[in-house]
Length: 569
Image (cartoon, rainbow, N blue to C red; front, side, top):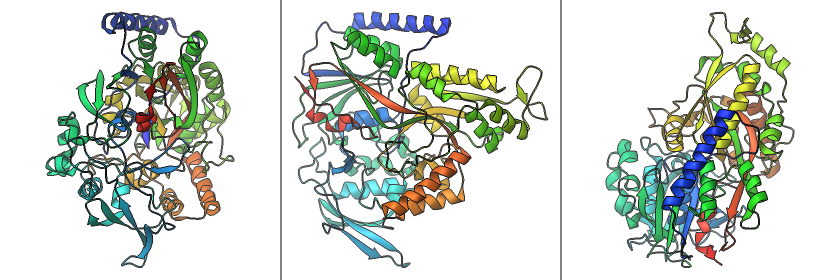
């Protein structure tokens, strides 16, 4: 899964917020007027996004900003395309039982595993001319499975028991089980062994020594149509064509990705020419996009793409007040998410009721729903020992107030508005919520990943089709200092039945039987609420009329994976 920030819609705003936004837009216009070129050649493309990556290592941290940029400069072994089909990007053919490249095999303990014969594209080279080969597969596996490297999705690598090297471009991977996604290697992002091996000498320090951060413009790190040529931290990343690229030549001689974390300033830069295109995956909020389409629809194509994205609030279950599920349920019951949708999103972003998206076949339409029910919320809080005082706020028997910090990414206008609405609704229930925000690269790179948020962290998960939530729900994936903060179970959720269900879902090859397991998993999630689902997201792609070839995917694999098909028309 990948983390991504959301969008929003028109609403009345407090005067202080209106003034702040007005100042931000004015400053943005001034900056662009001073810095933007009067005209830009069509062989250059400037993309605006709302975050800057916390790291460029493909295995560390789950952040859409990183995935978006790296997709232009690298290729995963496999990915899901715009039709949600698994396709080869760095391999020649997806191994399967049908084509003979996959075989069942009996493991020493009697269980059934599988072998996958994987052949890399014979044309694939790193940007320094070195072939992408079997040594890179083996090295990446070593890094990904090591307990001290802090890889977010380490499960992909630890399930590979061993790798046999057949030749320079072919390996056989031996897996410890046969799952319904047994041949899905979409999370296998190869590292260049000839460059990264030195940084891996001390696995615990690999995150700080990786060349992706210490020497990010090294051409040998990249095997996509572009390579990273310049990085200005917090500002922009410049990419140029990769001389080693073996596919169709990309159309642009230079691609500049500008990170503008204030979404009002991002729109201002688009209108004034500071950027050519605002990425749908990390761009304008929904209300901005709708208003933008009304005002400028003749000058830009605005495409709305619903996808496997949901905004939610991770709850830190180590917080004493949040260990009681009655408090967690009351928090959700106290929210009027239907009013939130109408007020901020013009009715276009429906409330979420599960971690599974309704567009996904795994979704259970009968999952438990939490309507706005202040009376039931009050009852649950009373039962949990949090009673209202004379000031209308809730306290326990020791006089401690029921109060939480709600954190999210700073500069995102929609999230700031959502925060204010949630704060107001919870205050009506007697719950005090304080708003504390951070830049995305700090929020995702440190606060969330290291579980430093004291109570609530609001962000979005972006997933692949029928994505089993092992990294986010399994108890073995809780980040800690002991595992160098690997895993994505940031809530600290522990549930033995959920651990078993995650295993059973993966091992169930029959779709109908698997669906019943999905139903049970979603029922437990809806009862326990380790996170508060808020709403299903839709992304807005704001494209100039001269830019063609962009095909939104609606899942965690971004449109930039096919940037070689983009062109100036």
